Structures are given as structure tokens and as C-alpha cells.
Image 1 (spheres, one colour):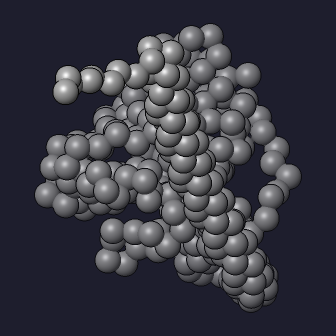
Image 2 (tube, one colour):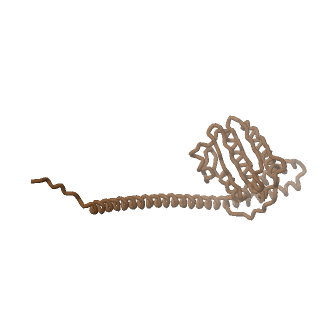
Image 3 (cartoon, helix red, strand yellow):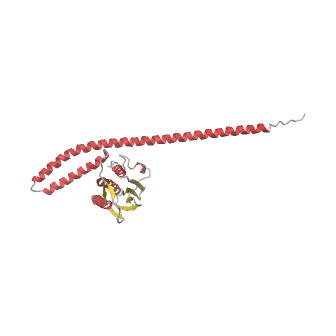
Length: 274
């Protein structure tokens, strides 16, 4: 009896091969669809988290604004009365007039701080005027110089000649710069140097840099800068930098922070000139 070897028809083999290829392609399509679906779900989760975070910050800012408005209102009324009586007493005073002048000056300063605090409360009608940015910074340096001396910090201001004027609300921009300079000074507990530079960028922007050689900001903290109530200071509120961000944003500007732990921090502010 002879051995018979059965072989499949070549056509059948091709059909089987095609069916196998089809099964493989179907599996690949299924895998790709599953992968795309997972990516889409992941992006949806990320977007949802981002939206929730924006809503949370918005609600926090709204709450802060309501608190700020209430506190400012309650403080402003008695201050107005005190200031009025002091002015009456000053008009009839025959001695110690310098005392009255000092008290009225300090009350005016408190009123100014309250007005700046109200920036948190609601959008205000801002009267923007063209100002010399260098003169503005020079005035601020005078204000914070005592704080700098107490912390053994030297402040240097370098600027390009003939810089264009900036369209701004002067008091708000001063507040933003004061907050940033105070942060820089306090980041150098053992003393150091704060370098402020002002340069033109192109035809329509001016860049201000605040460069300190302080303790720096850890990388994991950088994304949290500007968040309400987030602070690394023992007695800080976390509102100063947040207000600065808001003011610069209202001036169509941009803040960028670069930092290296134990080497220093650079806060760069870009402002339009038009």
C-alpha cells in the first residue's frame, strides 16, 4: 500500500492566508480604535480637570473680591471721620502742627492702600496715561529702600536711554512692582543684590527684569506662583503676587518667572508701548 500525501489546493491556501491577514488587520484596527479612545478619554479627563481648576480659581477670586470690598468699606468709613476731625484740629492748632501733618500723611497712605486693595474686589474704570517707566521705578526704589537696607540688599537700576512711554495706570503698576521687589528682597535673608533692568524689545514692547541672587524657587512650586493664598512666607497671604499678575494682565502685559534654587530668581515683565 502506497503512502498518499494530501496537499491543499493553492487557491485554498491563498484564501486562508487572506482570511488570516484580514483577521490581523481587524485586530490592528480594533487596537488602534481602542488606543484612540483611551487617548480621547485621557484628553477629556485632562480638559475636565483643567476646567474644574479654572472654575475653582475663579470662585476663589470672587470670594476674595467680596471680602476685600467688605473690609475696605468698613475701614474707609472710620478713616474718613478720623481724617476730618484731624483736619479741624489742625486748623485750630497753635503748636505741634508737624504731628498733624504726619498723621494726615499716614492716613492718606492707609486710604491709598485700601484703594489698591479694592483692585481685588471688582473691575474698576482705569484711567491710563502715558508714564515714564524709569521714573516710576525710581520712585518705587525710594519707597522700598528702607526695607532693602534692613535686609542688607542693594538695589541697582540699569536702563536704555530714550525708552518709549508706557500707557498705564500708575498707582496699579507701582503696586505690582512693589510686590515683586519686596518678594525679591525677602528672598535674600542674608543680603544680596537686586538688579532691575529696563530695555526695549522691538518697536512695541518694553521689558522690565527684576533679578535677585536669593534662595530661588523650587521647580515643583513654580506652577503655583500667583495662586491666591499660596505662599512660602511664614506671615504671607499669597495675595501680593496674585494681584501683580492681575495688574500686569490688565495692562496687556505678561509675567514670566525663571528661577534656580540657591542661585536666584528673575521676574520678567513685558509691557506694550501702544
